[in-house]
Image 1 (cartoon, rainbow, N blue to C red):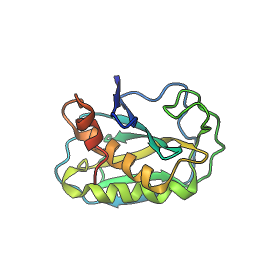
Image 2: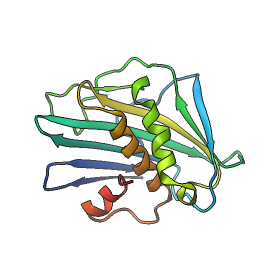
Image 3: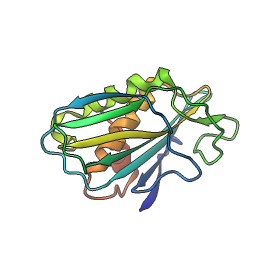
Image 4: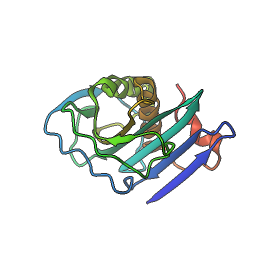
Length: 181
């Protein structure tokens, strides 16, 4: 269990939790999920849970997002089943975020960002996904003005890649590469 912080000279900050959850943030209690199955072949998971958070200054605002997932491989599935909550959850303020103090960050899943989660999985490709199991999105935090589908697409790529990486990123460049297409 570990938390790793990275920062670029541009002011972009990235935080990665491996086999632990962000503090003071409860997982979703959603009962309705949208599920899709992705074909996979080679990705070997080295972790059971990952969370990633980013705060990227852009002009006068900060693009922000946080996502966490768990991977359950106790049930043999054909391919990787991905579960995304579809119930809107009431967000609570989360003061431990990387976002600037003037930016209001709320926990909970927001429907407008959900397409980014599946698109992020599709970006990864078959070879890098875990070979089987149920990948469930459990936590989300978003900014009231600085979040977007694109930032959650990037975060999805990062957390899925982090599930299968063998080593913890040592440099900011290594960490930020998890977000790339």
